[in-house]
Image (cartoon, rainbow, N blue to C red):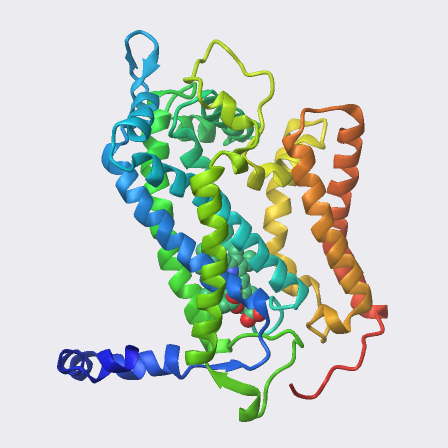
Length: 405
Ligand code: HEM
């Protein structure tokens, strides 16, 4: 189909003025990719798909949503009500909202798999350090966008989640109180908070789209890593992106859409776990829910925060646990990239994945002394992983790395 389009008169006209054909060939159809990429390399294109889905569904939601905490009928607030109206009165409003809500979780599933792949196969290592760093910026913006978005339905969990998180900024010395008020637009979470969160929630995905452009450009300069983690020197080791990886990516998209549609149509609340229940009660500043927890994709960091008795320490550790991702390419100096050939690193990274799941589970559960202790141990390993990376390459006996694929 692409060939037919490229042969058309209209395309020829555009091409003579933009050089579009050369760009499409060098960056897409004839882009050389390693011939041995496995299904873990599907998550980048899936992340792109979900980003587009989120922006499109978000635009339609914004046509009906009203970011106002003003009261109507003495009880329901305008924002909460407008979401209910989308669900009940707007044609296919329920579908667009569920696509967006399930899409938020899907986005994190896909991107966490994408990051995990990068960690396991050493894709963060030279020469892909900047590509990885841009990825971490993307992750932070995604987390910000999700946090801002969660306030918008103006339910109990929205309100109290935003209250707890904005409160944390207050713990920072000197600028803390100012930052907290700047975020809230006042002393407490209220109408001004809702307005600025809506504004930023709209802005962040557009920023993401631009930065993802940079991410892909950076990838195309250094080219993809591969499961062996080796540099490719021969042409026989590469294949054209089209049709090989367009077909493979399309297959990944089909499998993804099956799961996505299952959740959108049959189980839209599944990814919200039990916190969604509280979010069907309009925000009430006078009644704190018994259990406040962020959505699953933020819970690992929430556990790190809660693992420290001192609030400031908790905030710094939480910030540090994300910031340390920027330093990863410079901490791990091993010459071998892929965990396939690094026996010690392989155990460490698998334990790290389990560790993050444990942190996530604990952040989602009500506090108990046992869970708190497990959370503290898991937090300790989270940081230890990065420091061990400084030492392990010094003694690790790596397996012989193949010369080609
Ligand atoms: C909106 C989110 C993102 C999108 C749309 C995206 C897109 C992509 C695409 C299309 C690729 C090439 C295909 C692939 O290797 O899977 C890629 C590669 C890569 N991405 Fe992302 N990405 C996102 C987030 C991230 C994040 C959060 C990180 C890391 C923290 C990251 C790190 C990388 C790395 C290191 C590669 C090169 C992988 C390799 O060649 O082995 N990306 N990304």
